[in-house]
Image (cartoon, rainbow, N blue to C red; front, top):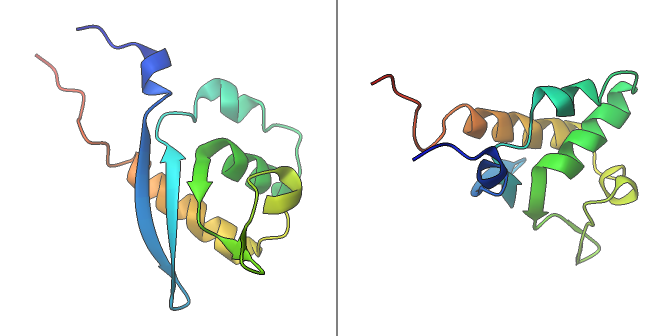
Length: 106
């Protein structure tokens, strides 16, 4: 069966991670990062890149502020400490590098 990249883009993965003794569950889009996506980050500040990456990759999380889930929007994600956002992207990147199935030469 042929690979359909539009179907790949729909695939998600959920992981649970620890940060400073607390846990966070993150569902993210496995194949959303493409050369076109990366090109769209050119010209942005480091903070803008960080926020845009999280918004684009993370589909759902259970990160709270005052008992309410933080929205995956620019304003919501901008309130999250940079150290935590960086950790989230690091975990997501690790998981993207370990896909469920590898492309094999036949």
